[in-house]
Length: 95
Length: 475
Image (cartoon, each protein chain N blue to C red):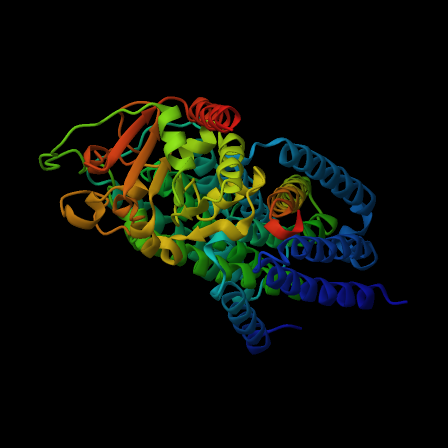
């Protein structure tokens, strides 16, 4: 079980990681990175799927269905949009 | 093999690939591969999560077939819709699309919380319950707030909602929502009546709308970035509730990275985040701007083009207007033309050029402009005084000297591109209107500034033709 302090350790280290990754990024990449991190939290679809699979009433099924739908949209849309943006970055010597 | 073990190992792999992918995305050289690395992580996690069917609760076993079917259908619809819409969207519309996808993620996190809270039959421990409530609140605010941000940037909702006492009302609303949530957790112990839980979610959604409506379009990028961080936090919290470390790590990494990005963006506009959310930007503008001396001097596009052909150094300051006119391809054609004649050409990008920081870089990259002739403001601002020509295309507030001098101006204090220090300034502009912030620009009246009126794309075509005919006939 990830209770109490273990969870806090995970949160703390993850927060530091995020801060360090973004800390020294040139502003040219801010938009793609916002989009890329937007894709990464699309992982929520996995949690929504778990909730839906464990649903026992119609209310839970409806909300779980909506959750998976929205989460899948977040993940797929975030990926496509970020990939399209990053595809365009090339330097002048590579042409 | 034990399905739980496979799931856990897959989530560990996914968490690693997310962090490694984000790291690669933070440099322009490796960025394109970064998103594929992260995408692989997502694929592994989603496929593995179907193994959950072997470990559902006893109570849910009879519903398993239906639930799994619903899950597959929802996945296919969500994926199919987002994939096609993401492929279709114009590069200029990217910010609102990011807002939309982000809102969906927030909604998914809130949905996870809602499923937990509506399961009133189950026993809830106190800490997970409070975390569920907080995650749901943040997720729901992110959902409705992002939708408003999307609608505003997409031009579906116009105008700004402002009246005295709005902030007091918003504050009351927020604390009422929070109080109701805490009541559900601390007093009702998760066994609150359905109407009360539903009311909590409705209040949270309405608050997201109320919070976003008063914010003007120019500030939306900061708001979208903020909601991106919100969704990350909500996902992290719901991940704790579900005991899912992949959600916890991914959510919290995005939560902190998104918070930092938000601060960087706000700093680039010389404003604090609180200032963006609570101030009445633009409402106070338009009062005494001071007398502006001089007059606007029009010049022919062809003449301006020929002048640049014989310059030794030209710096281009593009703005959102360039992208709206779809002129970036023609601009790059012109740049190649004069660069072949030995003119040194550089692009100067203001941190908030476009509609998001870095948005202009994406738009230029789309036209094929190599990123090594594109410079950030702080790297190139000292070079303007050595430039023969600075050309401003579709930009306005980011080159307005009033930001340096005029304390009564609403953009006072924002760092600007020093285009006015170049020997000659050309401003390509459709008409004589004001910028996005509604402020008059004294640069246009300066002695060394000439105005090239016209649609940016047509202007670029005229410049190309003028330079071509010159070189064709001259030899």
